[in-house]
Image (cartoon, rainbow, N blue to C red; front, side, top):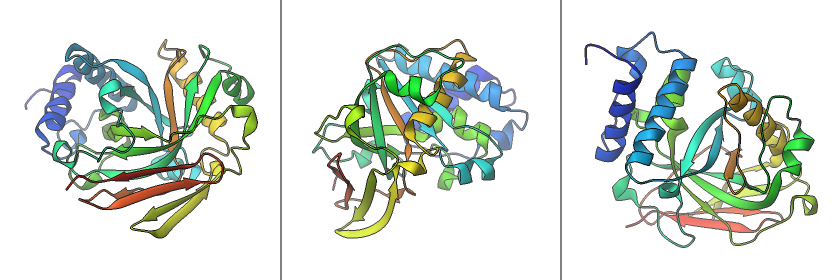
Length: 261
C-alpha cells in the first residue's frame, strides 16, 4: 500500500483478523505512525466492528506492569476496546480455527456499576464505580507476525484483543483485598506462573483510574455495565489444541480454558 492513513490501517488490521493472516508491523510501512494516531486507528477499527454488527461492552488494559511500561517507554497502561463478539462462554473451547496464534493470560475483571469519567480519577474513586469483580482469562491474538510490534503498532491493533471468559463467581469489591489476591497459572496440571493483584499497577484500581484519566483526554467515559479487563497478571502462555489452562485465584475461584481440537 503506497499511502497509509487511519482508514487504510484500520482496514488492513480488520482484514488481517478476519482472514487469520498475520502481517508485519504497520510501522515497517508507515514509520510515521505515532501513539496518538494509533489510537485513531484503534477507534476506526472499532467502528468497523460495530458496522459489522458487534456491540461495545467495555475496555481492556494492556502493559499494566511497571516493568513492561519502562521497556516500552510509557508511564501508564494502554487501553483498548472489548466487544460482545469477544465474550467466550465459560466451558466453551477457544476457537483456534478463528484465531492466528492465540495466547492466554489470567486477569482480574471489573464490571462497572457507575459511570467513570476523568480527569482526576483516583484509585478510590475508580473502585467506588466498580459493581463486581470476577476471575477472568483473556485470550490475546496479535495480528502481527510472531507478536512482534512497536507501541503504536499494538495500540492500533486494539492491544491484541481477541476473546475473554469470566469465572462463575461474582464478588463485591469490599469483600476482597485485590493487592494480595493471588493467582496460580496452570498448564496441563502444572503450575507455570503465579502473581498477585499487585502486579497490575500496584492495585487493579490504580490501573482503572489511569485508564479513565487517559480516556478522558479523548473525550471518552467508562459506562455502567462495561467489563474492564485490568491487565494480565502473568506472562501469557500459548493456547494449543486440547491444552487445558487454569487460572486459580485465592478467593475469586478458578477459570479454565482449552483450545479446540
